[in-house]
Image (cartoon, rainbow, N blue to C red; front, side, top):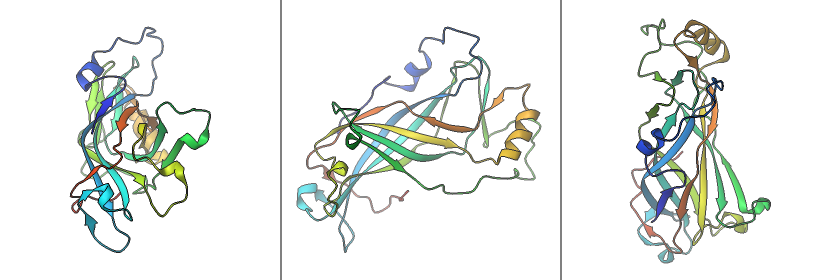
Length: 231
């Protein structure tokens, strides 16, 4: 399957983009690029284990696309960012390429539930005088930080649904990830932000990634998803 990054080809090119023209901007949210490192289609029968073959061999199966992605954060401001490394993909925005963007039926928002509550305090053995790994990443202006690979699940076909909005087989789509860095409670964020303000800005919040473009075959080849984790 053909996957490509709309804004850039690699994170190295992403880092080398032109600097923001106005240095007065200062406090800016990071820009996030998504690189797809692996794609797998899975077929789940209503009353059985995942199957193999092609999608046409399983007319009653729901088809999902499992994307393995890597996020690349770029600090586009003039102040260093302190980024909590723990994050969650809180949602996806999926739109059909070439469709009327004003038509809501051609744009789908998928939301995921939070996997854990925000922390009220950091581990006792952690030195909180300075931000340290593996809990925080320090990103100077115009520099990047790469995350580890993680999985995203996108439903592309459900024969039991009458809503054709969710039918994506044979479609070219754009996908954006909603990424949430909300693992710290507001009180803890204020405390650490004040403590570290001379080093940089503690960034807490949600950010929308750049687009990736995906061509979904009419009958994709089904892979082995038996060891994959569901979102």
